[in-house]
Amino acid sequence: MEIRPILSAMLRNKTGAILIALQIALTLAIVCNAVFIIHDRLVSLGRPSGMDVDNIFVMSVSAYKPDYNADSAIRSNLDTLRAIPGVVDATDTESIPLSGGGWSDGATAEADDHPKSSVTMGVYHMDEHGVNTLGVRLVEGRNFTHDEVTYIDQDKYNTPKLAIVSRAFADKVFPGQDALGKNFYEGLDPVIIIGVVDTMEGSWPHWSGFERSIIFPTVIESPNVRYMVRTMPGQRDQVMKEAEKRLGDAHTGNFVRRVRSLAEYRDNTNSGDHAMTVMLSLVTVLILAITALGIVGLASFSVRQRTKQIGTRRALGARRIDIVRYFMTENWLITTIGVVLGSGFAVALNYWLVNLYDLPAISWYYIPVGIVCLWVLGLLAVLGPALKAAAIPPAIATRNV
Image 1: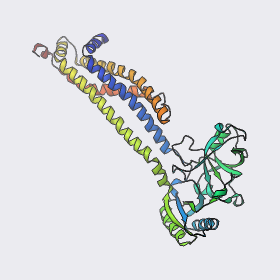
Image 2: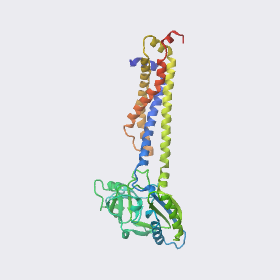
Image 3: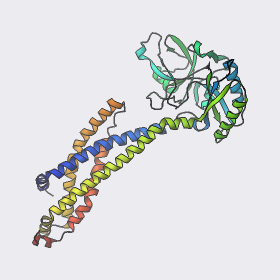
Image 4: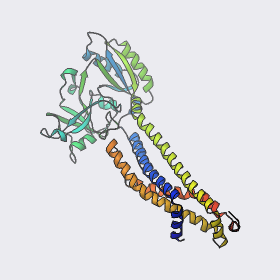
């Protein structure tokens, strides 16, 4: 089929073609970036945390007695929690994993490194039960011993001398090296790495360094303490109630302020991502539907405008397939102009999003896949009007229109 006659016909009625081409361009730009963001968020939501999230809960307690003894209360409360049937282990903690808030710091490989070269990390302070309570997998080195754990007042905190780190932290600070036994520096204070765990997410799931985490063998004595408890599978909710009751009856000078599962913390932190994926999915479907309706509308209008012309072509011997191919080709040309413009729009939109919201750059293959999808969408959308045009009888050419 000759392309030139089709282009000539489009130029005679160029307003509609231009509007549809622009609509397709905007659709490609928006849909490609929306689908990329949706995929990125779904990957983030589905990544392994390295922890036994579904069987962990966190208890927040606060002192109420004037003569509250934090050291004694913490030790007593931990003994009480570990003695509850169904409990795997329990520890104190300053930071709550996946909660969106916690303790962070910077580390360098050398004491004289410039502060700008420091690696930001999430910090947990736990006793020797922390690794088992989290359920993380120790792949190198060893756990803390009881004698290595320091109980210290929150106003007298000093950087501990030992740490267990995540693989992501070790690889970042000591790329291509075995980090076990090496020192990293928190400011000028050296810290020896005695253990490496495979995966251990921090408190900020949306942070790019979410897997760079460390555990210090420190129990920080404070009027406000958090305990993390890991239970046998399926027993979390039952143990939560029992733990709240037992600490309430322990009379150690503190009361239970909150008991919440780690899964609830995670879900609250990720609620914005869930809402975003749903919203962007709806927007994507809606804009594709509007674009398809626009193509159908333009093609239907074109058929009505060219009824006598189509009848004349049929009277001169054009087959139905020729008429269908004509409209398909016309739509393909309009779509192609739109996707060429849309490719530039998609890159520009992603560049703006990257700079404004610190999103990752779009992967290159999203745009070619989007182009193919819009070609297919355009051809499917125009198929109905094209078949309707092909059904126009040749006799229509002899009628007054």
